[in-house]
Length: 324
Image (cartoon, rainbow, N blue to C red; front, side, top):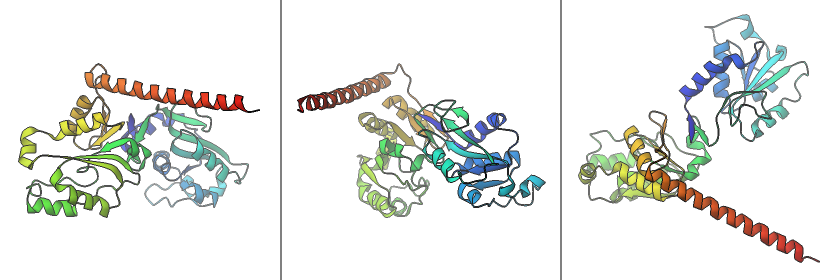
Protein backbone atom coordinates (compact mmCIF):
# COMPACT_ATOMS: atom_id res chain seq x y z
CA UNK A 1 0.00 0.00 0.00
CA UNK A 2 1.35 3.43 -0.99
CA UNK A 3 0.36 6.39 1.17
CA UNK A 4 0.80 10.12 0.81
CA UNK A 5 0.16 12.62 3.60
CA UNK A 6 -0.64 16.31 3.21
CA UNK A 7 3.01 17.01 4.06
CA UNK A 8 4.08 14.57 1.32
CA UNK A 9 1.77 16.34 -1.12
CA UNK A 10 3.33 19.72 -0.34
CA UNK A 11 6.82 18.29 -0.79
CA UNK A 12 5.94 16.50 -4.02
CA UNK A 13 4.49 19.71 -5.47
CA UNK A 14 7.52 21.72 -4.42
CA UNK A 15 9.89 19.19 -6.04
CA UNK A 16 7.92 18.97 -9.29
CA UNK A 17 6.65 22.53 -9.77
CA UNK A 18 9.21 23.02 -12.55
CA UNK A 19 7.26 20.53 -14.68
CA UNK A 20 4.28 22.87 -14.95
CA UNK A 21 3.97 25.37 -17.83
CA UNK A 22 5.57 28.76 -17.13
CA UNK A 23 2.81 30.97 -18.59
CA UNK A 24 -0.14 29.95 -16.40
CA UNK A 25 -2.59 32.78 -15.67
CA UNK A 26 -5.05 30.98 -13.39
CA UNK A 27 -5.26 27.74 -11.39
CA UNK A 28 -8.54 25.80 -11.27
CA UNK A 29 -9.11 22.92 -8.85
CA UNK A 30 -11.40 19.96 -9.55
CA UNK A 31 -13.59 19.61 -6.43
CA UNK A 32 -13.04 18.31 -3.95
CA UNK A 33 -9.66 16.62 -3.69
CA UNK A 34 -8.19 18.72 -6.48
CA UNK A 35 -8.75 21.92 -4.52
CA UNK A 36 -5.98 20.98 -2.09
CA UNK A 37 -3.10 20.80 -4.62
CA UNK A 38 -4.64 23.63 -6.66
CA UNK A 39 -4.53 25.91 -3.62
CA UNK A 40 -0.91 24.98 -2.88
CA UNK A 41 0.12 25.58 -6.50
CA UNK A 42 -1.70 28.92 -6.68
CA UNK A 43 -0.06 30.06 -3.44
CA UNK A 44 3.39 28.94 -4.55
CA UNK A 45 3.10 30.67 -7.94
CA UNK A 46 1.14 33.64 -6.54
CA UNK A 47 -1.66 33.15 -9.07
CA UNK A 48 -5.44 33.54 -8.81
CA UNK A 49 -7.43 30.44 -7.89
CA UNK A 50 -10.87 29.14 -8.77
CA UNK A 51 -12.84 25.92 -8.65
CA UNK A 52 -14.35 24.25 -11.69
CA UNK A 53 -17.89 25.59 -11.36
CA UNK A 54 -16.82 29.11 -10.43
CA UNK A 55 -14.40 29.33 -13.34
CA UNK A 56 -17.06 28.14 -15.80
CA UNK A 57 -19.27 30.94 -14.43
CA UNK A 58 -16.46 33.53 -14.78
CA UNK A 59 -15.55 33.83 -11.08
CA UNK A 60 -12.26 33.49 -9.19
CA UNK A 61 -11.66 33.43 -5.44
CA UNK A 62 -10.68 36.56 -3.54
CA UNK A 63 -6.91 36.84 -3.10
CA UNK A 64 -6.62 38.71 0.18
CA UNK A 65 -4.39 41.73 0.82
CA UNK A 66 -0.99 40.35 1.80
CA UNK A 67 0.31 39.25 -1.60
CA UNK A 68 -1.19 41.72 -4.03
CA UNK A 69 0.09 41.97 -7.59
CA UNK A 70 -1.51 42.67 -10.93
CA UNK A 71 -1.91 39.00 -11.88
CA UNK A 72 -4.07 38.34 -8.83
CA UNK A 73 -6.61 40.88 -10.08
CA UNK A 74 -7.00 38.99 -13.36
CA UNK A 75 -10.59 38.29 -14.32
CA UNK A 76 -11.14 34.60 -15.29
CA UNK A 77 -12.47 35.71 -18.69
CA UNK A 78 -9.12 37.36 -19.39
CA UNK A 79 -7.06 34.25 -18.66
CA UNK A 80 -5.22 32.78 -21.63
CA UNK A 81 -3.60 29.72 -20.03
CA UNK A 82 -5.45 27.88 -17.26
CA UNK A 83 -4.04 25.01 -15.19
CA UNK A 84 -6.80 22.55 -14.21
CA UNK A 85 -5.66 20.38 -11.29
CA UNK A 86 -6.77 17.17 -9.60
CA UNK A 87 -4.95 15.27 -6.87
CA UNK A 88 -4.83 11.95 -8.74
CA UNK A 89 -6.06 9.98 -11.71
CA UNK A 90 -6.77 6.31 -12.21
CA UNK A 91 -9.69 5.77 -14.56
CA UNK A 92 -9.59 9.42 -15.64
CA UNK A 93 -13.35 9.92 -15.18
CA UNK A 94 -12.96 13.15 -13.17
CA UNK A 95 -10.63 14.65 -15.75
CA UNK A 96 -12.99 13.76 -18.60
CA UNK A 97 -15.92 15.30 -16.73
CA UNK A 98 -13.87 18.45 -16.14
CA UNK A 99 -13.02 18.71 -19.84
CA UNK A 100 -16.71 18.37 -20.68
CA UNK A 101 -17.69 21.00 -18.12
CA UNK A 102 -15.17 23.46 -19.58
CA UNK A 103 -15.84 22.67 -23.22
CA UNK A 104 -17.93 25.84 -23.61
CA UNK A 105 -15.14 28.17 -22.51
CA UNK A 106 -13.65 30.45 -25.17
CA UNK A 107 -11.46 28.61 -27.69
CA UNK A 108 -8.77 31.25 -27.12
CA UNK A 109 -8.18 29.86 -23.62
CA UNK A 110 -5.47 27.21 -23.46
CA UNK A 111 -6.08 24.58 -20.79
CA UNK A 112 -3.51 22.25 -19.29
CA UNK A 113 -4.94 19.37 -17.24
CA UNK A 114 -2.57 18.19 -14.51
CA UNK A 115 -2.69 15.56 -11.78
CA UNK A 116 -0.23 15.19 -8.96
CA UNK A 117 -0.38 11.38 -8.84
CA UNK A 118 -1.15 8.68 -11.40
CA UNK A 119 -0.19 5.00 -11.65
CA UNK A 120 2.39 5.82 -14.35
CA UNK A 121 4.22 8.95 -15.46
CA UNK A 122 1.76 9.44 -18.32
CA UNK A 123 -2.04 9.24 -18.34
CA UNK A 124 -4.29 9.42 -21.40
CA UNK A 125 -6.56 12.04 -19.81
CA UNK A 126 -3.85 14.25 -18.25
CA UNK A 127 -1.43 16.59 -19.97
CA UNK A 128 0.93 16.52 -16.98
CA UNK A 129 1.52 13.87 -14.30
CA UNK A 130 3.79 15.22 -11.59
CA UNK A 131 4.60 11.94 -9.82
CA UNK A 132 3.81 8.30 -10.66
CA UNK A 133 2.60 6.20 -7.72
CA UNK A 134 1.52 2.63 -8.51
CA UNK A 135 -1.69 1.21 -7.14
CA UNK A 136 -2.83 0.45 -4.50
CA UNK A 137 -2.55 3.86 -2.84
CA UNK A 138 -4.40 5.98 -0.29
CA UNK A 139 -4.10 9.61 0.79
CA UNK A 140 -4.36 11.27 4.19
CA UNK A 141 -7.08 13.60 2.93
CA UNK A 142 -9.47 10.82 1.87
CA UNK A 143 -8.43 7.52 3.45
CA UNK A 144 -11.30 7.57 5.97
CA UNK A 145 -13.79 8.19 3.16
CA UNK A 146 -12.36 5.72 0.66
CA UNK A 147 -13.58 2.28 -0.36
CA UNK A 148 -10.33 0.86 1.01
CA UNK A 149 -12.17 0.84 4.37
CA UNK A 150 -14.32 -1.99 3.02
CA UNK A 151 -11.12 -4.06 2.96
CA UNK A 152 -9.56 -2.73 6.17
CA UNK A 153 -9.31 -3.39 9.87
CA UNK A 154 -9.56 -0.13 11.82
CA UNK A 155 -8.74 0.72 15.44
CA UNK A 156 -11.22 2.84 17.41
CA UNK A 157 -9.37 4.89 20.06
CA UNK A 158 -7.02 7.36 18.41
CA UNK A 159 -8.62 6.87 14.99
CA UNK A 160 -12.40 7.26 15.28
CA UNK A 161 -12.33 9.02 18.65
CA UNK A 162 -9.73 10.53 20.95
CA UNK A 163 -7.72 8.28 23.25
CA UNK A 164 -8.80 8.27 26.90
CA UNK A 165 -6.60 10.37 29.16
CA UNK A 166 -4.79 8.60 32.02
CA UNK A 167 -7.48 9.95 34.35
CA UNK A 168 -10.27 8.62 32.13
CA UNK A 169 -8.57 5.23 31.72
CA UNK A 170 -9.32 4.13 35.30
CA UNK A 171 -11.38 1.06 34.34
CA UNK A 172 -14.14 2.54 36.50
CA UNK A 173 -16.74 5.35 36.42
CA UNK A 174 -14.56 7.80 34.51
CA UNK A 175 -13.82 5.21 31.84
CA UNK A 176 -17.54 4.45 31.57
CA UNK A 177 -18.17 8.18 31.04
CA UNK A 178 -15.45 8.23 28.35
CA UNK A 179 -17.07 5.32 26.50
CA UNK A 180 -20.39 7.13 26.42
CA UNK A 181 -19.12 10.57 25.41
CA UNK A 182 -15.80 10.11 23.58
CA UNK A 183 -15.16 12.98 21.17
CA UNK A 184 -15.17 11.85 17.53
CA UNK A 185 -12.02 12.53 15.52
CA UNK A 186 -13.42 11.48 12.13
CA UNK A 187 -16.66 9.83 11.04
CA UNK A 188 -16.01 7.50 8.08
CA UNK A 189 -18.42 7.69 5.18
CA UNK A 190 -17.68 4.14 4.00
CA UNK A 191 -18.48 0.85 5.67
CA UNK A 192 -15.54 -0.65 7.58
CA UNK A 193 -14.60 -4.31 7.14
CA UNK A 194 -13.66 -4.94 10.80
CA UNK A 195 -13.23 -2.70 13.82
CA UNK A 196 -10.45 -4.14 16.01
CA UNK A 197 -9.98 -2.60 19.43
CA UNK A 198 -8.17 -3.54 22.61
CA UNK A 199 -11.19 -2.32 24.55
CA UNK A 200 -12.47 -5.17 26.71
CA UNK A 201 -15.33 -7.38 25.59
CA UNK A 202 -17.34 -6.35 28.64
CA UNK A 203 -17.59 -2.85 27.11
CA UNK A 204 -19.19 -4.07 23.86
CA UNK A 205 -22.68 -2.60 24.59
CA UNK A 206 -21.29 0.88 25.29
CA UNK A 207 -18.97 0.70 22.27
CA UNK A 208 -21.76 -0.42 19.94
CA UNK A 209 -24.03 2.33 21.27
CA UNK A 210 -21.36 4.99 20.59
CA UNK A 211 -20.71 3.69 17.07
CA UNK A 212 -24.43 3.60 16.32
CA UNK A 213 -24.99 7.11 17.65
CA UNK A 214 -22.38 8.43 15.20
CA UNK A 215 -23.61 6.45 12.22
CA UNK A 216 -20.42 4.38 11.83
CA UNK A 217 -21.07 1.25 9.78
CA UNK A 218 -18.97 -1.91 10.02
CA UNK A 219 -19.20 -5.64 9.39
CA UNK A 220 -17.51 -6.94 12.55
CA UNK A 221 -16.39 -5.63 15.92
CA UNK A 222 -13.51 -7.54 17.54
CA UNK A 223 -12.78 -6.80 21.21
CA UNK A 224 -10.29 -8.18 23.71
CA UNK A 225 -11.79 -10.83 26.00
CA UNK A 226 -9.90 -10.30 29.27
CA UNK A 227 -11.23 -9.69 32.80
CA UNK A 228 -9.84 -6.18 33.34
CA UNK A 229 -7.51 -3.48 32.07
CA UNK A 230 -4.77 -4.47 34.52
CA UNK A 231 -4.60 -7.95 32.98
CA UNK A 232 -4.46 -6.40 29.51
CA UNK A 233 -1.55 -4.16 30.52
CA UNK A 234 0.28 -6.99 32.29
CA UNK A 235 0.02 -9.26 29.25
CA UNK A 236 0.83 -6.50 26.77
CA UNK A 237 -2.05 -7.86 24.73
CA UNK A 238 -2.86 -4.84 22.57
CA UNK A 239 -0.77 -5.45 19.45
CA UNK A 240 -0.79 -9.29 19.48
CA UNK A 241 -4.58 -9.36 19.67
CA UNK A 242 -5.00 -6.88 16.82
CA UNK A 243 -2.39 -8.64 14.70
CA UNK A 244 -3.97 -12.06 15.11
CA UNK A 245 -7.42 -10.79 14.13
CA UNK A 246 -5.91 -9.01 11.12
CA UNK A 247 -3.82 -12.03 10.09
CA UNK A 248 -6.86 -14.34 10.02
CA UNK A 249 -9.07 -11.84 8.19
CA UNK A 250 -9.33 -11.10 4.47
CA UNK A 251 -8.56 -7.41 5.14
CA UNK A 252 -5.70 -5.86 3.15
CA UNK A 253 -4.88 -2.93 5.46
CA UNK A 254 -4.91 -2.15 9.19
CA UNK A 255 -5.33 1.49 10.27
CA UNK A 256 -3.76 2.11 13.68
CA UNK A 257 -2.94 5.17 15.77
CA UNK A 258 0.06 4.05 17.85
CA UNK A 259 3.39 3.70 15.98
CA UNK A 260 4.89 0.93 18.12
CA UNK A 261 1.71 -1.10 17.87
CA UNK A 262 1.51 -0.49 14.12
CA UNK A 263 5.02 -1.88 13.64
CA UNK A 264 4.28 -4.91 15.85
CA UNK A 265 0.98 -5.61 14.06
CA UNK A 266 2.69 -5.54 10.65
CA UNK A 267 5.47 -7.85 11.82
CA UNK A 268 3.12 -10.38 13.42
CA UNK A 269 0.34 -10.30 10.79
CA UNK A 270 2.54 -10.24 7.69
CA UNK A 271 0.43 -7.43 6.19
CA UNK A 272 0.63 -3.65 5.79
CA UNK A 273 -0.36 -1.32 8.64
CA UNK A 274 -1.00 2.41 8.21
CA UNK A 275 -0.29 4.57 11.26
CA UNK A 276 -2.19 7.86 11.01
CA UNK A 277 -0.23 9.44 13.85
CA UNK A 278 3.12 9.51 12.04
CA UNK A 279 1.74 8.89 8.52
CA UNK A 280 3.82 5.76 8.01
CA UNK A 281 2.95 2.47 6.33
CA UNK A 282 4.65 -0.33 8.26
CA UNK A 283 5.39 -3.36 6.11
CA UNK A 284 6.49 -6.82 7.23
CA UNK A 285 9.83 -8.19 6.13
CA UNK A 286 9.26 -10.15 2.93
CA UNK A 287 11.16 -13.14 4.30
CA UNK A 288 9.23 -13.29 7.57
CA UNK A 289 7.04 -16.38 8.16
CA UNK A 290 3.95 -14.19 8.58
CA UNK A 291 4.54 -12.45 5.25
CA UNK A 292 5.13 -15.79 3.53
CA UNK A 293 1.84 -17.06 4.97
CA UNK A 294 0.00 -14.05 3.56
CA UNK A 295 1.57 -14.52 0.12
CA UNK A 296 0.40 -18.13 0.11
CA UNK A 297 -3.11 -17.04 1.10
CA UNK A 298 -3.20 -14.44 -1.66
CA UNK A 299 -1.93 -16.97 -4.19
CA UNK A 300 -4.65 -19.42 -3.19
CA UNK A 301 -7.28 -16.68 -3.44
CA UNK A 302 -6.08 -15.70 -6.92
CA UNK A 303 -6.10 -19.35 -7.98
CA UNK A 304 -9.71 -19.73 -6.81
CA UNK A 305 -10.70 -16.62 -8.76
CA UNK A 306 -8.95 -17.93 -11.87
CA UNK A 307 -10.70 -21.31 -11.60
CA UNK A 308 -14.06 -19.59 -11.17
CA UNK A 309 -13.43 -17.42 -14.23
CA UNK A 310 -12.46 -20.45 -16.32
CA UNK A 311 -15.59 -22.33 -15.22
CA UNK A 312 -17.82 -19.39 -16.16
CA UNK A 313 -16.17 -19.03 -19.56
CA UNK A 314 -16.43 -22.78 -20.19
CA UNK A 315 -20.13 -22.78 -19.35
CA UNK A 316 -20.68 -19.78 -21.62
CA UNK A 317 -18.85 -21.55 -24.43
CA UNK A 318 -20.87 -24.75 -23.97
CA UNK A 319 -24.09 -22.72 -23.91
CA UNK A 320 -23.14 -20.89 -27.11
CA UNK A 321 -22.21 -24.10 -28.97
CA UNK A 322 -25.44 -25.81 -27.83
CA UNK A 323 -27.64 -23.16 -29.46
CA UNK A 324 -29.12 -24.16 -32.87
